[in-house]
Image 1 (cartoon, one colour):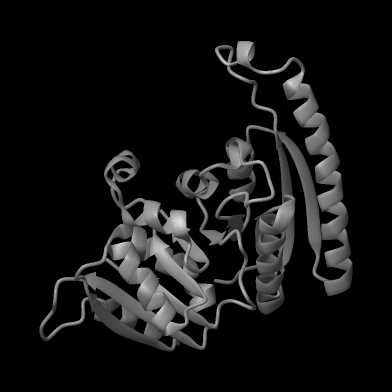
Image 2: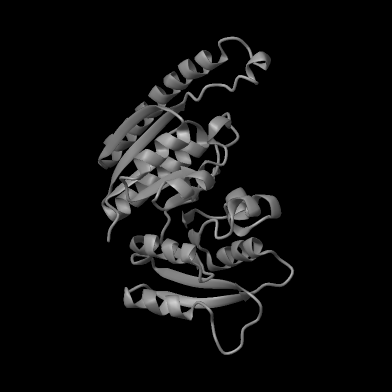
Amino acid sequence: MAIRNILFHAFEGDAGKAVEDVAYDLAAQHGASLTALSIIDNTPIPAYVMPYVPANLAETYVDEARTTSQTVEERVRAREKSTGIETEWRAREGDIRAVFSQHAHYTDLCVLAQGAGHDVPVGPALNLPGDLVLSAGRPILVVPWKGVPGSIGSRIMIAWNGSKEAARAVHDALPLLETADAVKVLTVGPEQTGHIPGAEIAGHLARHGVRVEADHAIERDMSTSESLAAEAADFAADVMVCGAWGHSRVLETVLGGVTRDLLHEVPVPLLLSH
C-alpha cells in the first residue's frame, strides 16, 4: 500500500497556503501526484433567509469566488512548476461537501484545513473536516489553520482506544507510519497494572517494520483530548492518528467528545478515519 495521489482543498488565505504546504511536502516524501480541488459553493440561500440579505448577494459571492479561484490556481501552478510535482487542477461549483466527497472517492489521502482561518470568510467551509470524514471514504488529514512549522510525518502519535474507527485510522496511516522515524501508540484512561493497552496494535505495526513504542497516560484532571494534546507535545509529534466519531456525532456535539475537541483545537495535523 502506498500513497500515489493526494487530494487537497485549494482555497485562499493563510489556511489555504498551510494546506498546500502540507500536501506538497507529503507528495515529495511519497512520490505522489497531487489534485488541487477548488470548490465554489453555490448552494441556494434558504428561502426563509432571503428577506434578510441584500439583493444579488448570491450572484456577487459566486462572481468573487470565481475570481479568487483563478488567483489560487495561479499560486498552485507556480508551486507545481517550482517543485516539479505533477498537480491536476480541478475547479468545480456545487455543494462543497457533496463535491469534495465525490472527488475524495478516487484518491489516497485528503488534506483539509481545520477551518478557513482569520483572513477568509467562514461560509460553507465551517466544520468541513468533521463532516467529510464521515462521507469521503478516505483518510482526512486536518491541518491547523495557523499552519505547521516544517515537514511532517517523522514523529507520529497514534491515539488508540481499541475501537474499529481507531483500527481503520491505523490501517489508513500505514504508508506514513512505515516511513516515520518514531511512532508512539498512546492510550488514555485509568491506571493499568501489568499490561499496556496498546501493546497488541504496537506489535502488529512492528511486523510492518514500523519503529513503534506503546505507552499509557493516566487520565487525571484533564479530558482525554487534553491528555492527547499534552502527550503529543511531550513526544514532539508532528502528526496524530485517531479514529473519528467513535460515538454518535450528535452525542459528541451535545455532550462533548474527543473528535469534536480535537477538531476544535487541532494541536498537530490530525489523520482521521471513520
